[in-house]
Image (cartoon, rainbow, N blue to C red; front, side, top):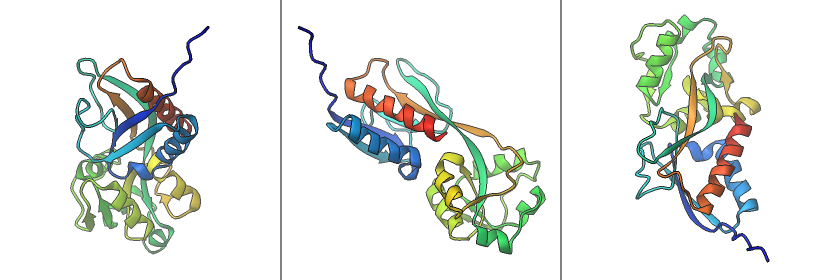
Length: 211
């Protein structure tokens, strides 16, 4: 008689950047996991600090390059585009027709490094514009302020996909390609428990579908 395979159960802690629990792929992960593995309980830990995968989290989701160290494993979940976004109301009053127009816009700046890198890619002067609202390390605040018509924000496609669909955000200068960002799932060990493997499978499926 074959041995019955135990259903995954228990707690799985996922460390993810601030605001990522609002993205469509993460919402799909929660929904799909309830269907596939109802005995697995997710704990979503939002922080822009890299969590200790030995003590604080089982899986870390990050959009920055992560080197594999020791027995750790870095898995690619998706590749998201970088977009400059604003609301229709803002663009009606402050039209952006050329890259140079961006220097006169009001920026919602969640990362000076990202904003300056975008300017560099567009061939614009690499200095922070005076017209800006800083919200350090909070792309969620930048996104919601942009939706409210308060300015431009540099955001990732996976973070804004539903708002581009419903029209509350518009991609500015969409014909100018900007750098992409690879989304990773990182674990501390190659050997994983059944519950962590189950969550990784769902993460991979949902991010692939949303990319």
